[in-house]
Length: 509
Image 1 (cartoon, rainbow, N blue to C red):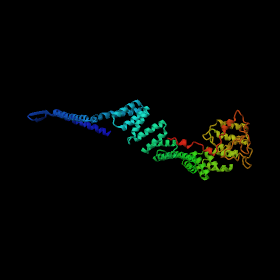
Image 2 (image 1 turned 90 degrees about the vertical axis):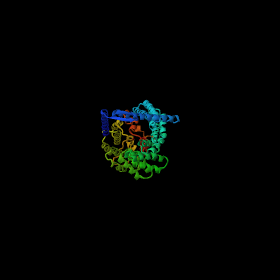
Image 3 (image 1 turned 135 degrees about the vertical axis):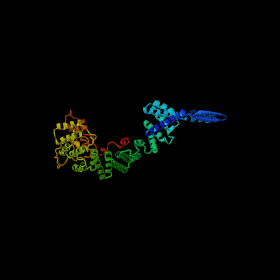
Image 4 (image 1 turned 180 degrees about the vertical axis):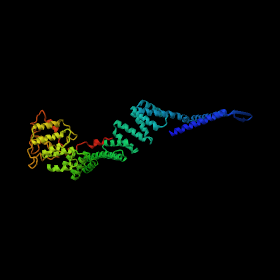
């Protein structure tokens, strides 16, 4: 703003001074006398000024004609560029105007105009680093990928535009689904500009899709170091990649490496249930119960999940139900009011046939609407207490229509639901009498259903339909009962969550 004001003031001053000078020359009575030879020339000052201006113009024209003659002589002598400098400025003006129009057309999405103006800019403007870029983008907009690739390849010849050309070829390869070529191009682009954010993210994605977990972790570390990822997101992704590496090591038979990587994944992201349960399983196989317990408790503290409870139960698979309930207090103390804690208290009490404690735990749930899981537990309590069948049927009917959470299929053990399939137990709840086989059932085990084939030892060899023959078949049939009692999940099944391969292959972008 200040510069424009100064420029206007200077221009006004020059005009003012020129006006005063012109007025002085017109009104001046003085004469300019030029004595040449025997002749004497007298002119006014105004006429002298006009003659001076005409003389300057004549000299300029004469010099221009002289340069033109020299250029013509050089052209005749074989120099084809001799006339170039006469038209450079005009051509550059036309070329820059065409280039500007091409970029405006690209921004507006007009592919035809963009391509036309880009070609004109290429012919008139001697700046290939600009015209090649706009021509490539115009060809891409028009859908002519072959022509776009030609221009992008040409950009690779100039070190200044090599990165732009590589990234353009990378985008074309991604659009065509050629991930193998795209990965090579992404690596080359990353080498040209190691700190480019978009290139890093693309490289990470392609390396993950190619199952090159080690390379993806290096790229992820570079992203985190450059500050392109939040710390929590970087740890979450790194944990998923470490878990995937652990799975590969397990497939190759390298148990020690698999165990170390799984433990690293669990420590990086305690909320990654798959990583924690996998690490706990591998640690248990190595006899390291202490570290497995520590990992599960840390993960439970971050987010209570039934899969973690299944893994925690598997640490001591042969303990008595009462001892298991005491050991689980290490988990419950971290989140005493969490819904999962109340569910687990109820299910552990069911296994011990402590119906009163199970009911008290369910009643502590702050559910605005009873879930399928709580209704199923209440049905098990009613069956265990020997309440009338219509009460059991009522709870099961409510469970069928009740909402289910994402982990509704994962219980500590299917044995907690066995009271639904057997006769009501008349054993006292204090557990002083000889416990039945169901009461002694391992909460981490996966017993076979009480059918005629493969029935658990000590249980009546009857089918599920026989065990529930008193139920109203029109209200609840065997298929519905199976829907209420989810598939049995042992410790290995509890690890079956979203695997790291699918998670690591997609940036949170």
